Image (cartoon, rainbow, N blue to C red; front, side):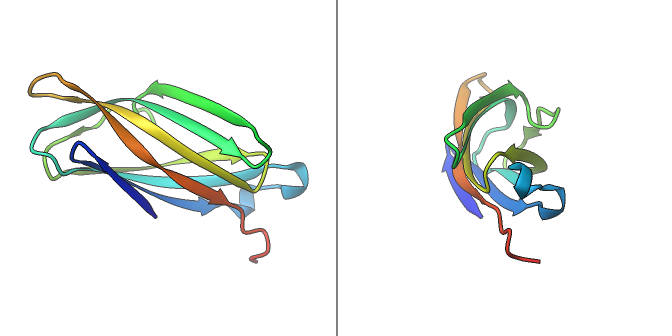
Amino acid sequence: MVTATTNGIEVSVEVTYQAEFSSPLQHHYVFTYKVTIQNKSAQTVQLLRRRWEISDAAENTKIVEGEGVVGQQPTLEPGESHSYVSGCNLKSGLGKMKGVYTMQKLFDGKILEVAVPEFQMIANIFHN
């Protein structure tokens, strides 16, 4: 698990290689990741947008941007957290992701850029 805190917002990520949905011979590797966002600040915030940078060992890099996370724009009171699971397909068994969440403080409307820490995706193709 990797964790980063920006402006009182803590983001933690856990990655799992999904061997049963992957086909290494076809260069298709599937990973899921669980993200937990915890509001350790004194203000209520809402997650508005996400931006991901996804790279693999085959030197493919793509940028994914959009509103919210998995169709939601969660609002977090101080002390609250929100978790979700999403997935990523790579053409190699080794990759990495990092990102930024755009959040807004509801009290004053201030926009925050919150870092999602870089995490590794490594296919364990020799296990099971």
